Length: 273
Ligand SMILES: [Zn+2]
Image 1 (cartoon, protein in one colour):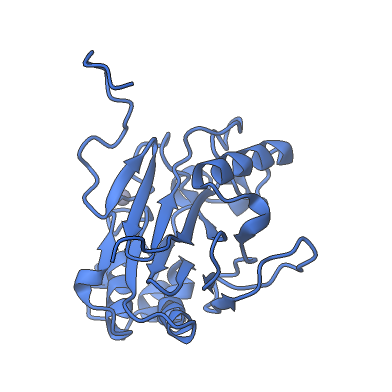
Image 2: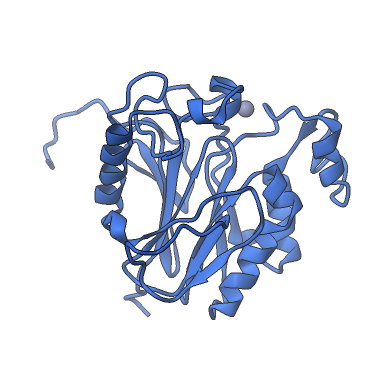
């Protein structure tokens, strides 16, 4: 390391990522006051086709020991062991839990689509394959939210911000990870109808829905200033297949035949004041 020999960069992102996003190997990091998020790609795991490589979805049809090994690798990269992950049984709803007690192996899975926490040395984790992973970060708490169209229609981000505030958060910033873009998200009228209260041309464009714009507007309505909302602006469906699991692109029939990528957020004590 530190040698002057020119080396081919192993960073797949080039200059694609703008602050607060940064390359962390083949994955995407994000650092904001109070916390750090890591949005994983599907690179660097052990799963075989069609889940290659880094599939962390426990409810997929992948070989479970491979998924467990992948989750172990994610734990290594975030530096927080799996026993200290806060995960929920994701149901495309809008409940966001507030967790103030460390997790225990005896905990029953709880249905929710996000977790806010004030705990240190724990990671709030969601898994996605087109839905939006949204990290909420403040000096007092962090949250990770799973936001698909159903969740957004049910105000999951608004509820995420409320959970953060209930946990004591003041200056909240949001980071939207890789997720399906308006480019690829052609929808039926049901989905359009779910977003009627958002402006046409912003949330609804011909037969497409712009979930990232809906997310931004919902956060704005929850009084998160626009300059506190950061979107990595990467579409999981039209990015190379080697980078992201995409339910729509890969195996639209059975959700269990598509892998899931992990997104994690955890608190980082502000050292410099
Ligand atoms: Zn796209």
